[in-house]
Image (cartoon, rainbow, N blue to C red; front, side):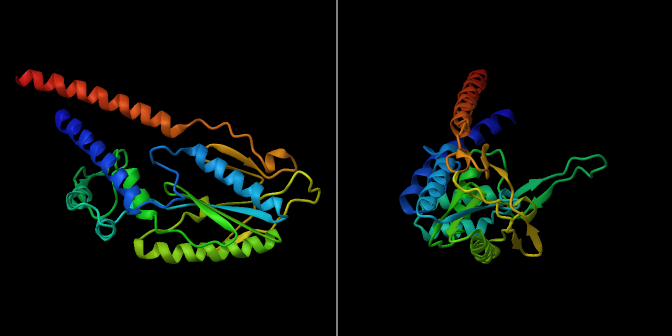
Amino acid sequence: MVLLETLSKILERVTASRLSLLARHVGLLHPHQTGSLLGLSTFDTTSTLSHEVRLHQRFGSKVSFLFLDIKGGFDNVDAGQLTSVLQAKGAHKYLNAWVGCFLTGRMCKLLFQGSPRIFSPVAVGTPQGSPISPLLLVIYVSPLHPVITKGIVIFYVDYFVATVSSSSHRCNVQLLQGHFRCLCRIAAPRGLTFSIHRTELIHWRTPQERSPPSKAGVRLDDLYLSPKDEVSVTGAPYREVNSKVATAPKLKVEDKDRVNNSRRIKTVKLNIVKLKASLNKFS
């Protein structure tokens, strides 16, 4: 069993590397996606957002952020839709077949006190913890991108940051509500929804502003969300205060992606050593 699990992890890692190269070449990845991709990290997310804020404020616009999180992103990846996307983009047949096989025919069981301890079939979703699962999710959510004339939507795996600018924060709220409805329409056919209770809103100010912070909130579905004074973007604090932090936050962000990649490489090397040791026993 240990040998089988080791081989499967190595195979998943190799397939993830090949699919990542293909995804960049044929356009399976959105250019604003910064998560779980080689060469990109949380720093790219935070620096891009900081640049957008400073750029729009330089022209006297008011800037607002809406932070959205896909509800159960890994658990809602549909194998049929994903393989259709791969096929439409010209992915190799063996990769398409491998992904379809990887996401179908799986079983799981729930472990809790009094549970029946029997396996049940899993119709949708990709297993968390697999080396290829983040990449599959990133490809699956790539079409979820509304066109924003004065703003941008940054992706970090299943985490979205919608940035808009206008003459007032109240106008920004109306724009964000419209973009949210657009995102919901795109996400619905893919079986995806957003965690409204985890959504956050923040209005930015310049250090020169002395007026009280805007209290204009956003209404998403039937839930009203008030703006916050501080939010966290992939571990980096953003504060809406009357100081330099509001326009140029000092980002002390640990490059989590590179650290995780280093750990994964060490794990793969250790698994290879174990695999060689196991093979030597049979030789």
